[in-house]
Image (tube, rainbow, N blue to C red):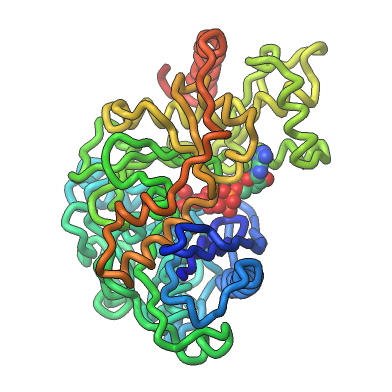
Length: 494
Ligand SMILES: Nc1ncnc2c1ncn2[C@@H]1O[C@H](COP(=O)(O)OP(=O)(O)O)[C@@H](O)[C@H]1O
Ligand SMILES: O=C(CO)[C@@H](O)[C@H](O)COP(=O)(O)O
């Protein structure tokens, strides 16, 4: 038995899998609180992740009805980019600043300039720094809270922090490290020179975690944690990785030709590449995968975060929201939304705000506003697919994951907007499943990752959604309207 954990933005999920029985035995989740402040500040207390893990673990294991001594390894996936800066006692010096925090946009712009602009970033890192990556968060702490900055003894990412709590080891693997902004994604090494541009007073040899290989364990479970969770002490904790990297594993996206699209708090599209990627667009993040190889990715910041705001504005539960979506036609009777409630990463508009356009006295309905926000979040991901270009072009199916994938109508909208067949894995929290598979791969030398995916990544044939030709045609015009609005309001060329 193996445990997969995914520390997402809104919740931590735990899944229990039986590799030999080829079955998912139990799943559970616990929510986190997101602290939002002025100027795009978005932070979380790392202790909340541990509390959420404890609760979700107990429930998932109880649901699975297994003997705890049968558990052989744990794998952890986590939201990318969050800065978890620890003091010498291993305590956070500041709440974790998250991937969706845009407060540090000015620090990011300054860093890009210091590194020689986009070309200099590409040359040194293999990708262009974007607001949201860890680098500018450290620069921000240095400037705004020098006392906390001086106490930094280690800088981890969210999944590294959970691994640290589980094992006592401060380690990192290439997939998640790719999103720090001080890691060369081609050579899979820290860039101490880039780190020195960000935090000249901190010794990278001391504060950056030791890099481990993707199949190498982060460590063994600490005795204290083993006792608390009722597990044997000789349990392996795998390297784990960023949620997108483990979501790729959990959707079987471990070879070229498959696209994974996530409708989570963020929206992401990614496709595996055996080689490091030099994409045409600087927006494409040339991240490493957490099983070897690379995972070029586009991330948008306003997906279920945006749909939830509109849903809550009208006090709708998910079922009622689904009914409103279905009640509006394609194109929401002319309503266009630019859903940048949280600023945006792709396109790079960290300080943007949302706009509702084309409203008149007849089309101002709950149904149209709900539909338009979901369509616009999906258009953002179509734009992402266009930026990925040839990297995603070979795929004739989208593997859809994340909370929004639970909505049949949203699945249809994705199929129609992208003109591509869509299917969900049976476990929509693919990142937790991917973490469990990576844990089994780490512990079982006899099994390949492909064999593990064959056993556990089952696609849900009931979710298979084909694009409808007339809808595809209708969406061409609505997408063009969205792109014109993007151009008119934010100068993003059509
Ligand atoms: N049927 C649905 N329709 C629309 N949104 C949904 C549906 N089910 C779940 N969600 C949304 O999915 C989000 C959670 O997605 P998830 O992928 O777990 O996020 P994260 O990993 O970022 O924490 C929540 O905002 C939730 O409201
Ligand atoms: O910033 C990124 C990827 O670059 C996000 O995808 C985060 O990794 C958060 O993911 P979710 O919580 O939305 O799954």
